[in-house]
Length: 112
Image 1: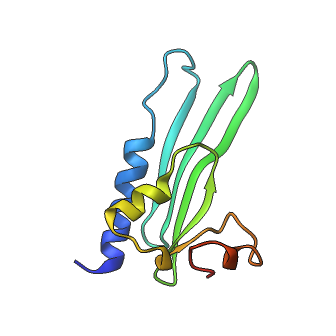
Image 2: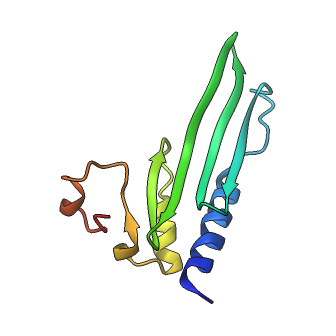
């Protein structure tokens, strides 16, 4: 199977497995899976209401750009990068977009 096809399948699978069903302790907050397969943007969002305040934030966000997986946001302790590596994604195909450009060369991952 083509590399990018695998990456898309794996990202959708991992995010789908991660996303939580509605929580009876927080019935007014839901996690939504957002898959833009045409432009290769993949997200898990939390949205709703809590104590009269609007809740809307990105939990996880991955993109595929230039044949590489970019981690754009991870507001959890879930090691999605470790899971992608376990599936066979090489570090050279992962960009930690959460780090500034000048920091990326100091990691074991791709710079861009």
